[in-house]
Structure formats: C-alpha cells, structure tokens
Length: 223
Image (cartoon, rainbow, N blue to C red):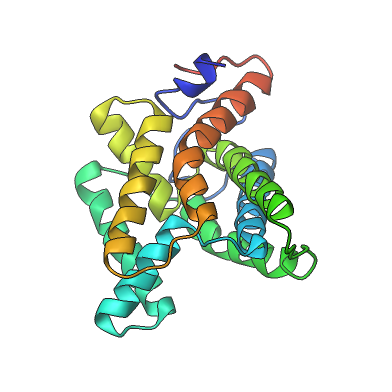
C-alpha cells in the first residue's frame, strides 16, 4: 500500500509509447490511452451527478468568472491556456494524448451523464463521489502510462513532480488543494465533494499509476 503511494514518476511498460510526440503509436497503446481518457470522463461525470460540489479546477473557473465577468467556458479555456504556458519552463512535451484528452473526456462525460443516477441521499452521493475519484485515478494511470502526452493539468503535475522530486500523490494533492483555495478566495463555490476530490485525487492517481504498471506484463513500476 505504501509503495503505491510513493510513486515518484510515471512508470513505463511494454505497451508505453517510446516518446510523447508519436503520431502513429501501436493500436494497443492507443486503445488503452482512449480507455483511460474515457474513465476520466466518467469519473468527472460521477462527481457532477452526485451534486455535492464541482472539481477544484471548476471552482477556480467559477472564481475567475466572478472576478472578470468571463463566462465559465471562457474562464476554463483561459485557465487551460495559462497552464499550457507553464509547460514551457517545465519542459513538458505535448502529444496525441494531449489532443485526444479534450475530445474523449468530453464525449465520455456527455454520454455517461445521461445514465448516471442523481441521488438525494447523502450516503449515495458520497458513494458516487468515491467511485468518481477512483475511476479518475485508474483512468489517469492508463492514459499517462501510454506516454502519448498528458492533458494540460496532468502535464503541470508531471512537470512539477520531475522538478521537485516529490511523490506524485503529494504533488497532485498539493496542486489540487492550492487550486481549491485560490478558487474559493476568488468566489468559487466549494462543496464537500470538492474537498474530498482535492484531498484524495493525489493518492488515487498514484494508486492508478502503480497498479496499472504492476498489472502490465513483465513490468515493474519505477518508484
């Protein structure tokens, strides 16, 4: 258990792409990348369907909306652009996964939100939130290990991890808590699901990376 929370790098497996800038990856790698992104979208949808608070980055977008008058969509877009600019000093490399991240996650969210229950009971809401955080971690493990380029926020996470040398769980957790705090100070709305996501997503992503690598054939995760 402790080893799975101490992952200090994105592991590489036999099915990982040799480099992020690979526009013709093996089909199996591409399929696992898309599977991971699909799980990310469903995980985000579970959080939305629970109705107990939005994700930390949406809180930040709400705060920017309150302070600037931008729509929530443009606030989210502006945040993504700023995060991508931060990739430059962190020397992160985009790739096919960076592009597919936006399309596959959005499609998975639109599809899954039609079928997910929207419970009123607190206990069922909590169950959906927990399931969403878990799926987010597994999905992150699959698509990041594919090594075809991270999404904007995951690229910030991996860049900061490489710069600091801290475990992935600590870097991601610190990043999400900081985003929640900033969004709240700017006027964003925080629910208990937001707090749980911020605190648990780091360990969840670390667990996802560890076990996806561990269960891949002839592969040991790099700790």
